Each structure stands twice: as structure tokens, then as C-alpha cells.
Image 1 (tube, rainbow, N blue to C red):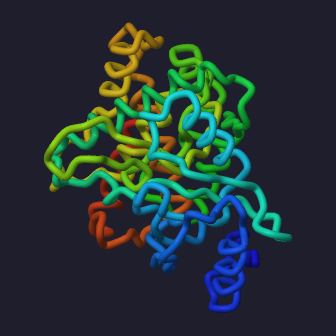
Image 2: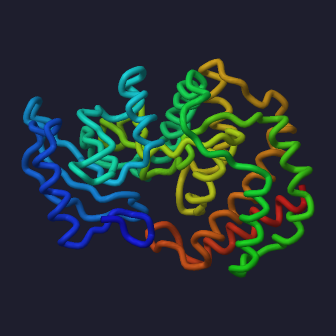
Length: 313
């Protein structure tokens, strides 16, 4: 059922068996009209769509949910249901298969440029709400990002031919990590915050509280959350993607969470962390980005700029 890449297989044999187990699962008696949902970019599991007959709601069934993701989704469903889509059912096994699953409210899709830049405010506000929630659960399952991880991102990016003076950042990782973590002490963050992992109940451009999905909680300086999203969306043709660390700082402040009060400290941290995340994403994606985001030339120029500014900081 699980492929060599660690993900649930999507071949006809695997789909047929999972469908059979879903129909046999006692907790899913209200689930009907199952159909496979075509995999989207970056999908971390196999998805079905269907109907939850108890309420008539359209639902999405995710197969291959990690224990950590299921724990956080269930905790949010109990304690702060406005932060995520409605969770109708979940479990850690399907029949005799050790496989996590969830049945959630199906919403139209992620945030996008149709909000004319306000999608970034909606996303950072949702991130801050998750940070507040996670503070109540310091022992909840999560990974940890360290200075060693940052050094690995830089090494990997250099191996993949990243533009810019990336090697110059290697020698200062420990010193820069101390600066960043002092200004912004690590705390549990969403861990995979991007436009495909946040949903809206309202169509663009109507504003609403965004809802988060696909939690991969990680203990790290909270500025990493915003830097990841900014690097992924860096494109001169798009509106609103700049200064997301400042935007997240403001959203956290509105909730009474710690912020970086000194603007000079914030700008220094911003420059360093954007450089690190440019290298992280290059190490994963390399030079050939998804055409739906930006051209390879724009992507390369953005990475070069982030890395060069970080070196100069």
C-alpha cells in the first residue's frame, strides 16, 4: 500500500483495496459517493471526495495521514474548530492496514492571487492563530529545526548549483542562528505554511478567517513560517508577497504573542532567514520551478537576491 517514496500508492490495485476498507470501516457508515480526487502538486496523501450523509456535506477523505498531523487536526477540532475545516471522522487504521485517515469538510481550494494580495494577510493571521493554539500543547508531536539543518540546506543548495554566494553563509550559521533564536525564540509552528495548505469559506476577493490543513508542526523560530511562504511566492508580477515576516509579527502582536519589538533586529533577522529559506527551497526544487509560479529566470534572480542580501547582512 505504501510506495518506495513513503506515500500511499495511487495505482488501481491500491485504490481498490482502500476503497473496500473505507466501505467496511464502521466509523464511516455515513460516507457515500466516493471518487478519487486527482493528485494536486505537493499532495502528501491519497485523496477521495464523497458525501457525509449524516449532514449532506461534501467531504474530502485523506489517506496516509501521519500520526502527528492527525493528532493536531483532532486537537484543533476539539478545542479551536474555527482554525480548520470541520473534521467528521479520523483514525489510525483501515481494517488490517496501519494507515492514518481523516474525513473533513471539503472547501473550494487554497488562497490565491484573486484576493489581490490580501491572501497573505489571511494566511499570516491563520499562522498566528495556530502559534497561539500550539502554545497550549508544548508536548504535542512535532519535529525540530536546528542550526545543523540550516547548514544542510546550504550544503545541498550549493550541490545543486544555487546562484549567489551561498558558501559565504556556511561559516556564520551558528552565529546567525543564535541571533535569530534570541530575537525570535523557537516555538511550535504549522511547519508547512503555503497557499495550498490554507482554505477559505468565501470566494475571492471576499475576506474571511482562513482555515489551515496538512499540519506538520515544527519547533523553530516563528519567522521561518513567513520566510518559507515569501520565498515560494517571490514574483514581481504578484501583489502582497513582500515583508511577510513583518506582517506575521503584526498578526502575532494583535493576538498578544511575543514579537520582535526592535525594527532593526527584525530587518536583520528577516534578511538572514530569507537567505536560508531561499537555499532550502533551491535544495528541494532546484532551477526548474513549477510554471504556475514563475519563470526559471525570475526564480533564479529571486534566490540570488535573497542569498546576496543575507551575506551582506
